Image 1 (tube, rainbow, N blue to C red):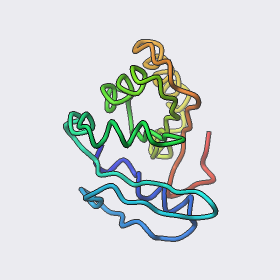
Image 2 (image 1 turned 45 degrees about the vertical axis):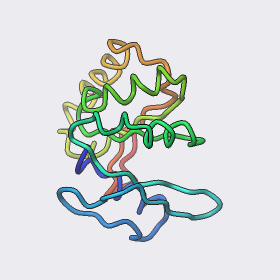
Image 3 (image 1 turned 180 degrees about the vertical axis):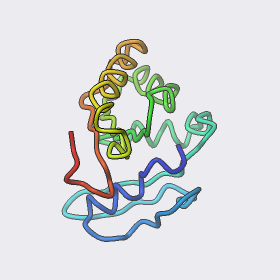
Length: 141
């Protein structure tokens, strides 16, 4: 989705501001970034989710060796995409970004909500769930 922090996460992985960040749609097309022997792809946020079902995107998802799905507050944001990945028998990690914006006394409940949604949607391809703050990467849970 738009403004979940995908570009900010790429910048943190690489260690420099290579991907444009900001509010709204900053990434207009699939953009590769190479660093330390690996390639990361930034993709445009799509608030309709159906854009990810084009042949271009299905081929893109299949061609990756690893997949990070970034959400902000609920699996429902990307439910069609993760279900597609499950149907294609692909594995992926879910990054719950902006975790530092969740009140400290609500964080455990929020984590449980995400895990409950994974069970509710019967997601099979989830390898890991990361609760992070891309702007404060030491805040990882």
